[in-house]
Image 1 (spheres, rainbow, N blue to C red):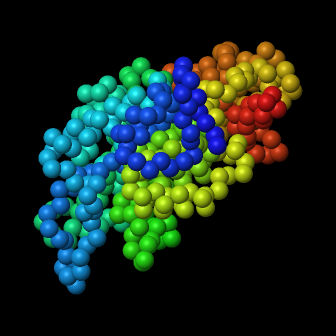
Image 2: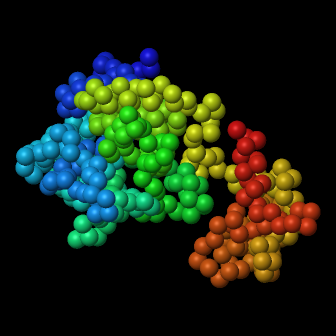
Image 3: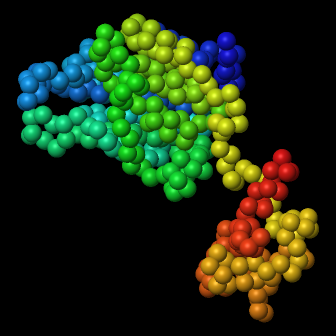
Length: 367
């Protein structure tokens, strides 16, 4: 079974497994600084009062009324929250991050505890549900969202954020902090005897986004409230390792059965999005000296409003101004700055090709 070596210690922790037990006890036995990311879906402490019936047919609404979601007082809930957050912070690597999801019942109390313990909040993300449960009593707004808090272990943490992966996932637009995703329904929803196997099963799409944003292939993701195993299923599909903690034996069995059916992608390279800042730098002059773009070639913007000629040294000239592809691009637009790789185009067989295409081809060759 795979193992991860704790930093600076001889103790080891097994991964890709589900441990049955109470989360605080199990986490206390795991080595310090051994996980890359924690995703936590803790009890919400919903404070439900009585049964909720649908007004049209008086059938009971299946809410969360399990013992694991019940706390006698807010103070008891706060003590529990502080304890598991302390344990999670001990297990995170110095540059690790934590995600925690909740509703208005608990997320603000969790957020205060996070800050009190030294976590550094990076984002709060609103999960807008496309298909929320209606407010049957008609005395409040429909609760159509939940909130995720994403935070680094410390203010100084050099945390991972896969910006390009999130941008690619969002049709080349920056990913916003409001995510419109459906509840877990249909074939994805686990059932037992025709009923929901777990009352708060999260959709894999939600976990896909969180895991892809904050981890790399091979990283270890810990979920201390594993439930039906969504975190592990997504981690496995994305080539990450997982460790789940769950106290309910029924949910442990359910999660293990689910995970046994998950098959990760065969081609690991398809699971990672290299950050542009980590890619080797390719000067425009390299394209010139290799004959990819020849001296004397006229470059233009995509609307053919501006032109410049390529010099043998990799600079451009337009009129009496000479400079880099970025400097000349900014000059002709009368702009403070310009990304010349995206601004300039070369005509090829009657079509304009952005010069960044040639840079990417050369970068692939150099790999």
